[in-house]
Image 1 (tube, chains in turn cyan, orange):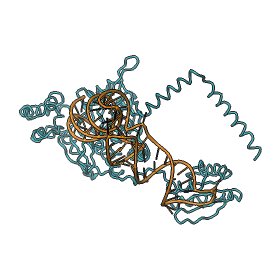
Image 2 (cartoon, chains in turn brown, purple):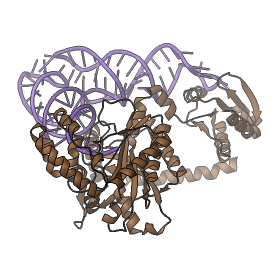
Image 3 (tube, helix red, strand yellow):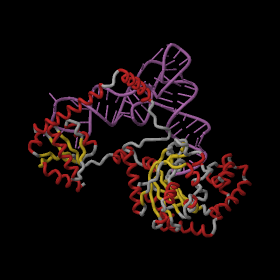
Image 4 (cartoon, rainbow, N blue to C red):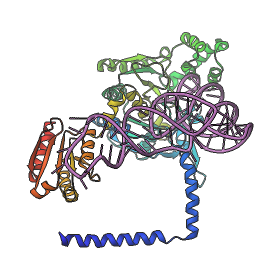
Length: 472
RNA sequence: GUGGCUAUGGUGUAAUGGUAACACAGAGGUUUGUGGUACCUUUGUCACGGGUUCGAUUCCCGUUAGUCACCCCA
């Protein structure tokens, strides 16, 4: 023992000396700066603020957050989707080309900025365009088709924040590229539906078809013809939209506009036979999968690249808040070609993690959340006295190496304080190592529910621990 | 981007033109061998800046942030 102690002490001494040297070295001037900084710090500390529209995800919600992502990940890979990661920063032009000028996402919500050499960049507002870009750039059309990928990460839109809408938000999404079958659409909806369902969110799918570009051209002519006759009844916004992005008039929530829209020609009636058949197939498959959906003829979505199937996910209840679309997606058969690749059919969806999280927490009370967020502790390790503390380090490491997780707080010295923690964290058992046990080579195992304690040999901790974990 | 509302400790809430009360949570303790009870101590320049006032957390203005509706979407 004595031999062990000495070198340890020496090295500690050395470190201290060095630290002192570093600390005393700065003299008057630096000190002034520091104290000025202190005053500044005092002022700014009160002012600590997140950048607008950004937010922290902290425990216990962080645990739920991770669970959402893990859940999504495991479902996606069960369906054969593989992970893809693309940069958060992209060329501005990528989204202008794909998402489209005239869409709100591009026109007013871009988190755009200039590089040092004046290159026009932006933080990605969504991931589909990036995935399509990666597909083209890396020649993924040479892989066995379809290419199925999933992604997860932050997206940015410079919009005015409110509940459920942040400037930095996170999406989980899946994309299937290189397959034009309507089964693909159904499968994607199914994946999203399942992963929401698994999190306890009863979801309903709003679905529509906007056909091909040609279908739409015809329909838009028809629609604007109709709208022109009702122009007087439309709101100002819609009048603007008529020329800019006619389809979006269908989305308007204004009551007057609604009454006009109800009478408007429906896009479904203007689809080609082929497009209609495609859509019917998708719906048949959804029926087969027993996924509840509502045909929503006014659903058009705000990104230009969509063709054929478009859909959004809503919680089954709660109509009141408007920021409650949990996710959405659709088919985008023309996007890859638009970005310079071969003509490649594709479809995808994305889920808003913040929306999912808030939908989940709305449905669980705080106590449940706290429990859900707490680390699951089966065994707590308590120690008493310096010798026991030292021995604990060794024993805990040994357990951990064996895959047995024990919670502890070796910084505490009173047994009482440690028992309180064990209790607070819902430990079912506590291992107690005191002076006496160190000497005897034993340890106390306490059942926290019954209060029954047994003294066991330190060598048998692992066996006992494993037995406990198995019976959990 | 447009309009409305709000801003008190970690959280949820009080009161007041003379510097703040309560509950819960956190930390420490009630003589370092035992938890779920009890008690004590402790945790705030009342978002920031300016104005009115002898005096402002309280009234007014601005900023910032949040929130609701719109816009749009995740």
